[in-house]
Image (tube, rainbow, N blue to C red):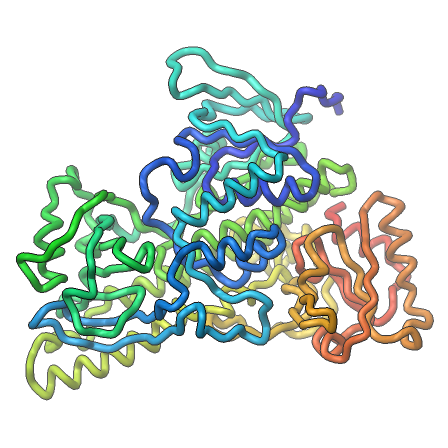
Length: 570
């Protein structure tokens, strides 16, 4: 292998969206310098983003690790606003209430016992600048706005990248990077250049508009974050709050066909139908046509004979319907996994199997979350039991009541999805069984040492904490006020559970010695806590830098070197 010139960038990140910024922040925390190139304007200065607003519990745990949880939790979104979803036929005198899905506000929401953080509402136009400011404060990243990647050429020691300032027409710059991570969205230039297929299905085109309107003036329904308008033709539009006040995203579900000129669409007519008034006062701020889809990259890295040096993350690797808010959160999960692997490779102790392990772990999660999001969208467009919704008859009232109950029950899995947020597992990633079942898996590359225990149910709205290898290490509040999760996120952590009298012959030192031989950092933490011992179930538990359990046992086996090699991808 050739030597790496001093001028070579450790990691070049393409795209300064939330996933790219989060990766830079986490790598910086691990001591890795990064460069981000973003073809658009500086974060927070461009057009208002009417995108993600649901920051799930796992992403909030990531924010806690980065020291920005308070900024996200108190971003300015009203903490007393109920999170209700209201189903109706429309506003105004003729509008009829169908039902609602109650969700408490941030200030009344109870923290689940399995969590140290709760779901938050933080619209992306507030979320992204929080990350951008954190990256700037950290000082480990050179963010270059207005610069686009033209192409990249990979070899055994790195990647040659050709960059161009968008303000220039001809001149381009050539830089070298040891690794490149594409966080450049669904239309990823990097993914297309690598020729990686984007597999899945279109779910149709949707029109959205940002509207400034005092919505409460036009209805007497309960206050909420979201209003779904449903007719005999199914769900035809919805309002979703952007700031909890006057800014709303109004989405027309429509036929799903792409319009040649979105600006020519009569958005005013649909808005007047929803508001129930021809004289309604509002301001249209931006109309956007976008493609709803469920696609997943066939590969998450460049592949080839040498260790991969180009990776995909976030929307560059997967797209999913926004019904459920899982897209951004899945992307943050990608970089939580990839970050420690890149740091391990750069430090020299990460093995050659890490690239394939990243794909084997994260691709099935994208397929899982994407399928759930598509299922949620199907509930919106179902037409069963809706033919009499508008009638002022006992039959119409009964149909509205039944539909309201059905919609609330179904959408509870969309907006109260603790199991989907925290219950994913890497236990089968890279196993021969998973390789046969999930396209894109790599049999034999698992970083998890199984212990033969059974898996808990994987249900969207049910989460059972388990320290089974391959799962998120359980949360328990410790006596000093910290969560067990606060112990993780740096190096590997070897937990020793129980008091001093319990550790005779457990052999924990052999794990430390085996790791030291290959340069893999391990921190040993002793915990004497009954609740922790009950949840973790073994006296020794090895937790990865991303907070996932890699191995557990009551004593260290004779082949401890094999365990260390498995978990570091050797």
